[in-house]
Image (cartoon, rainbow, N blue to C red; front, side, top):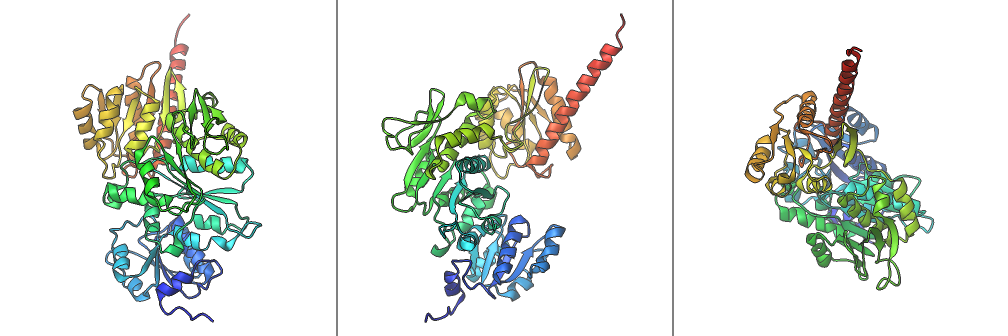
Length: 518
């Protein structure tokens, strides 16, 4: 008979199943939003002793913590609360918003307490619900600076069309622990991972490391540098996505950093590197040939032939032909094909697919002007893709820059803009970049601080510049929390302001016509 574990580390090493003995394990859960609550709820169901620690929480979550059998401490977390120290946790599980520099994270690491994220816990208890053959759902991991959510949704949609029970989850908004515990069960979990979640996963003990069926890093560019501390740390976190991959490491041939990640990854023997880009594909790639989107990776005769998945013309009919969207489609198709999804299912899935709101969404066409909401473009890399899709646009830009220098983006894309309208509380950096790199571009600042006024004024300024055939593009290259509740609120206010202005214009035209005489 095996000896019982004598310390926390030994005990944690045994906790690799839903059916393991989690009872009484002292766990501190940091943060009480959707992810933190899913962690606390899971642990309480497992019988652990749970203390939730958070600076603030929505009333509903706070009310439910004692209902599930956990305790809650609300208040400042720097310095480390005495209640947390007295609890003496054997394990700390942090929500992704806690950076490595946070006082509680430093305390946990310096104290030698095991530190997990929600992804490690989900991997360890993934066998709560199993498939008919007795195995847990396969995992497919998706990360990248931009395009994660679209690719995750695309891949899951393709898999469902191919007959698989697939669930998009993780950073996409559905906590992975909710998917793992769903009694319906799944064949595949398509897991969107932020760099924050991957940083915590990089700390995992070997028994807590996922072994994904397939994985992808879509691209890499400066983002979240304040959270990680440096670009190198951000890059290293992203690279964790490929670790232990069994079948397909999908990478972006147009982004050398992702290729290097695959080359340096410690993967399961036999895993293949699968490339994608908008060019002609090689024998282990997906790409585009004469307007046809093709797979040359997942067929027997891949050296001399390819399988047609769709065409760029068909994608254009559904507003899916922007270059960065086509790249996301190729990446998602590679993930789906690695699971045996047939080309016809991929084509059918794309015929029904629509982008989420605020992703190069055309909100109106009026007076020859097209108004486009890409509020989800919260960093320079995403915005560069938007500007490439709409060259010469009137560009609405600005917000919270998150420590990223916008100068390179303005130098590369700014001079081609018809005009720039700068919003946000960090306008001075954006304005300085335009004056330095694109001095000939007409530049307007929105100095309003009230949320209700920002987009109204931005739209008014854009309308003054716009002429027949122009595009007005909201692609801020920055986060939104300086003036809005989130990128979705920013996009919705833009759309509302556009529609209100069009309605006023239509009403004015009607009034002018009515006041005429015969």
